[in-house]
Image (cartoon, rainbow, N blue to C red; front, side, top):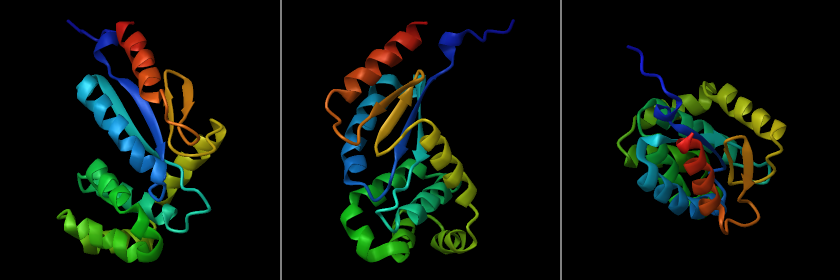
Length: 170
């Protein structure tokens, strides 16, 4: 018997982030609370939207993809956002250093940033974000609704929970 009821598949929350964005660091608390509340019923997907005003954001997005490949995507994102103030000065060497601190293969990170193996993923995310009219970060998309946290994150988590609850109730 095949039990593939829609209530068993998780609700997807796309979180459009930029790893040089202080507002994305602030948003981590909301994402943690959502993970705590929903567990595996909510699939929070990191989506990249590097902004041109931050010169290391594109490299940071690629580094986050390498961390994902190495099994510590969100841990890496948190570690980089915790040091968002240093990234402007530290650049790519800081991204590699953070990888090493987390026990990831720092040499592979360095190679990934040089060979650009994750550029297409970052470019695709950015293009999709633009098509969805994402203009700043963090921005969330859940149930076809876009919630812009770039201006204010006030009330966003409650709104996400409202939509998630509705979608999970089916």
